[in-house]
Image 1: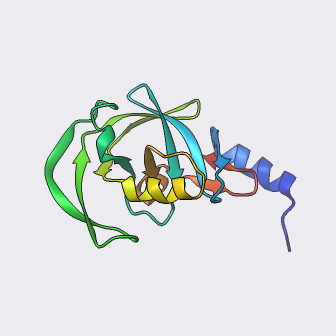
Image 2: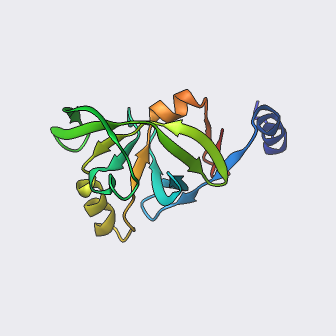
Length: 148
């Protein structure tokens, strides 16, 4: 038996404080507007990504401080990539201040090249499973909302 969208939305609204509106890209990826340490960013939502990451080249732009030593990270599209964890930074999604969050710095050139080849704008980072799990998020594809 299918649940009507009105009942489902009422249920979700009662459970959650807020939602973040999402946009669908030409490649059917979901994107959200964010602020990292007060600076605007575009993040791609990827439930298959273990960790949330920011493009390595944007470390200084977003005033991110690294924590620990570089390490090799696995990627679905390449063998290994150099990565580094950041100290917690302030994160805002849409109009909602999420609090502080640690990212992995990763070279996202290969992701942005693929997106560009399909007519999409580059992204600044990826919101991954670590974020969704920590925040007990619900991703509603039908209404393009991320419930926090």
